[in-house]
Length: 530
Image (cartoon, rainbow, N blue to C red):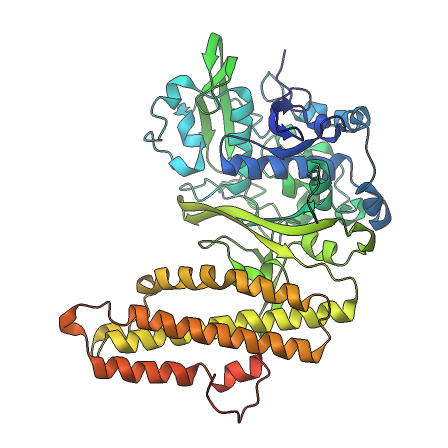
């Protein structure tokens, strides 16, 4: 009997009464003690499971149009109805067995040398020095093996010659719209959050309707070696739903029947374990302008590039994740699910508040620098004119913050180093990484507080100017106090009181420079005083 991911109870969840459970995917809509959160043993697996469930709904249960989508936020779907819809693709979700296997090559790859299961986890980068020392001996249960497999295929980094990256490149950034109660009350069912990230079916219309065009493991792999007739797989070559089911790596899990075993990650008892897998290079090579509905993108003249995490996710990423930003050469746009959500009329959803959950691996080629995730509020404004003004003001606030940070960095460099010191000309950002991280973290709550003040009346010019003045005052005082703390941190022999005083005067002047005044609508001829 095969282990089928649409029928087995394998997804770890928390229910409304805070009890933990494992459910089959169709149980996500149960109303008796509903599911409110995922609780996988790793944060990247939680992100993976969210994308798995969203992709499953998008593929099998997508609304016909925006009207049906809006109704779906309130409709209580029957679990059996969802189970019936999923059953259409049951054959694509067998994790083991002789036929096609979920996210695995149709070829058994028996000629390949088996690798320890630790190499399937992105953060181990193929190493056997994972913090769970005996994980290869313990193995993974089918549930955890499925999570690890989907995580790798969805985030696949560079892996050497012919080991292809994910459809969105190595370590893509994923952003989801999350719902929460506006006031104290029962938690929002997870089903509602999943539905917020599903788009109308028409947006995925395609002439490629074969099951294998959606789930590539149902057919022989479109190999991408030098002799291949399909060296690259573009969006026009398959169904756009394959964005949720991309399979760049050729992998086969080796299942082992055991009398009694324990999963090395979850601790769950299992009579079926995966301790090894086999892989081969030159799998599906995704190219062209793929656009994933759960990722923000950079849009140039001829290409669309998914964004990737670069360090902690803070309000400095507001532009591009929550709202669009353009320059002369390109534009950074939020994920499709975010822009579509912001265009919906949610007047009758005042019992809910919404946040953006952003997460992903920060990759250095095949090595992960870290897993990052964070949330940012989404201020839904129905009126188009008010929303446009709100976004313009938000953009100016973020850009002004970047100007203040740049002033602080340049003036500290002038205080620390003499003009003839090579370090004064260095563009290496590493010495200032601690300063940057502290700046964005320390000013974040004030940024959101100002947006909360602005949100009810973004067209009120008096209110907007007061918000700008308060932001300028806050950032001016923050940079001055930070300068005082940091200016004397160099070695005593290198300190120069005169140089420090000159740099401090420059900082006070720079904080009133023309670019900042324009952004914050300050009179250009106003005196440079707080």
